[in-house]
Each structure stands twice: as structure tokens, then as C-alpha cells.
Length: 189
Image 1 (cartoon, rainbow, N blue to C red):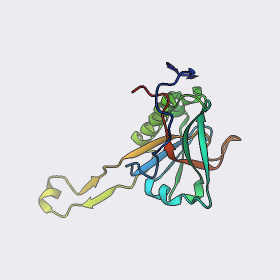
Image 2: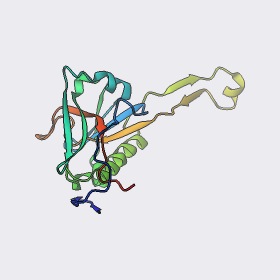
Image 3: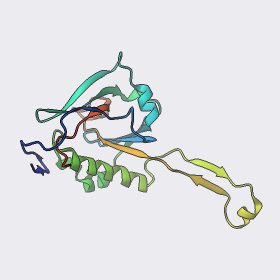
Image 4: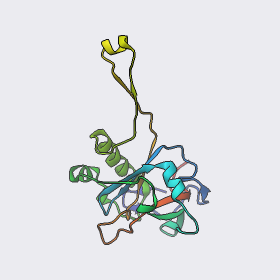
């Protein structure tokens, strides 16, 4: 099988069984969802996303690529995720990413790379504020050498391409998709 940039062929190579993989067991500290239609990113602490899922309140939905179910997760309104920041994606970053060229229901690889590019560029340019551990240096010798403040940031970030996330476009849902299961039938092992 070959996977094209605009879709997939009919033959499968990889796994088609859903496994528990998603927000509940990933090792990230922060998540960034790239809302393509809204041209926004949604940034929140992973633990706040986990805490927001209420199976009695939020709908669990399947995700399909073609006729294959490739994921399951919960549809959670933005307001239900504590501390979720909504940030516009600048036009130049959005355009350079090429994300708009990929169909919503197409192969995930290219969309994921484009979403990661958007998140990375926004982080590099300071457009995504992150909580940093700030330590004021009290040691006079260190202050004389030019160290008054020490910043520690070892933050693991998970990026998700979430086409219909947010608001502001007729195809947006006002929600984020918080995945809990997936399979990757299009990977080559």
C-alpha cells in the first residue's frame, strides 16, 4: 500500500484494532490543538484536559478514515477545560504550514506535521505563553556573574490537528476532541 498526500489507497498494512492510547496515558505536560477552520490554537495543561472529561456529560465519538475506525474520544466544550487558552494563528504561519491543502478526512501524517509546524512557530515567536518555573538567584557571587533569575522549562507538548475545534467558522463545533483510543492502519511496521 502507498499513502498519498490527498488520501489513502484501499489496501491496509498496519493495525486496525483500537488500543487505549490518548490523553489518559500520554506523557505530555501541555497540549496544543490546532483548529484549522477557526485558524486558532487551543493550549491547556494535559492534566486539566484529563480532568475535564465527564462520560456522563460529554459524548464519546468514533473517528473514521474511509470506512475504518481509527480513533475514539470525547467531544469536550472549550469552556469545560480549565485554563484553556485560545490563540489566533497568524496568517503567515498558517499559510506557510500548508495545512489548508489537506482534506479534513484525509491521511493524518501530513496534517500532523503541518499542525506541529504551526505550534512550533508560535512557540518560537512567543505567541504561546507557557508556565515557566522562575527562580530568583540570591547568591551574590552568581548575581555578580550576571545571574539574577534562572528559568526552568522542561515541558513536553502534544500537538493535535483538530479541524473543527473552536468557533468562528460554520464547520466548527465549539469543542475539542480528546482522544482515548486509536489505531494506525496506515503505518508500515
